[in-house]
Image (cartoon, rainbow, N blue to C red; front, side):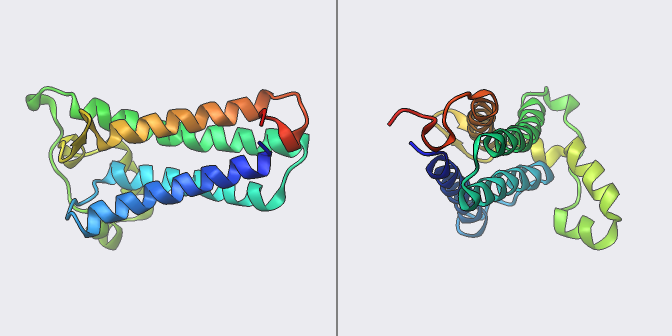
Length: 168
C-alpha cells in the first residue's frame, strides 16, 4: 500500500473518531470534560498531519518527518487519555473536585490557565459516563492513539521505497 494512501486512511479514521465524539456530545448529550477536549485536539493534530502528508505524497525523508510528527502528536493524545484513565481509576476520596465547563473557563480565564487546568483534569474527567466492550471513552482513545504512535514509528524507521512501504 502506498504511503499516500496510508496517510489518507489515518486522516479518515481521525475524522471518523471526531465525528463519533461530536455525535456523543450533540446527540447522546455527553458533555466533554477538559481532558476529552485535549484528546479531540490530539486527533485533530494527527488528522491534520496525515491530511497534509496525503496531499504531499512524501519521499523517504518526508515519510520520516511525517512519521515523527504523527508519533509525537499521537503520543501527546495518548498521554491525555492515560491521564484520564488514571483519574477514572482513583479511589472516590482521591478524585479531584469537579470544575467549570471548558466554555466557561475559556470565557473567564487566560488560555494558559485553561490549559493548566485541563491538563490536571477535574472530577468531571474521572466520571465514566459511557462504556463499550468494557472500555470507557478514554480507554478507546488510548487504543487508537497507541496504534497511531506505532504507525508513526514504523514510518520513522522504515528503510524501503516510500511509494510502497507496506506490502500490497
